[in-house]
Image 1 (cartoon, rainbow, N blue to C red):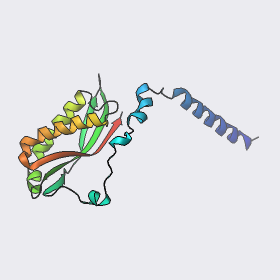
Image 2: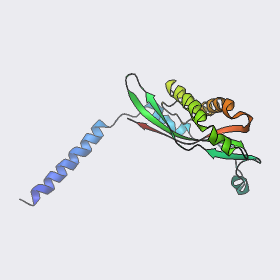
Image 3: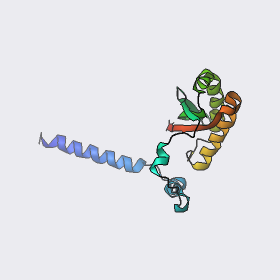
Image 4: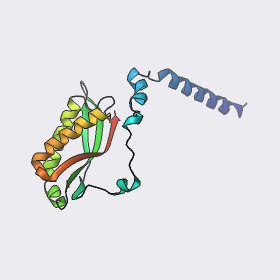
Length: 167
């Protein structure tokens, strides 16, 4: 009986844990159910490129400059921070202007943070925040904000990494 009691307790604890997990599992929303279907790219929109095109890198006379630190953006709910979004950004600029980007990085980070905070405040990081239309809106807003800082040397802003951690 002494050797059987720990096995019975382990089985009861495991069963109770599985039962609690099934009982407390959140219900799937309709948005979650359709998310997998919505992210499938239609076959006629797929662009096939040769392997040489992928290895070419930036366009002639352009280079990519990765900003040193990530951006951390709080997503504020009605009475508290509900999530944190972490993003890494790069800018595509004319060749030879890397030092200009790094020299103006504090101002560039300031305008990028303001755009990211505004995007969070209008609900841009809620739900399927990585959908193509939401990311296009964010990229174009970042590009418009960076133009006065970097001028005509800037051609694009790239979101290289983005993640949301719900609290």
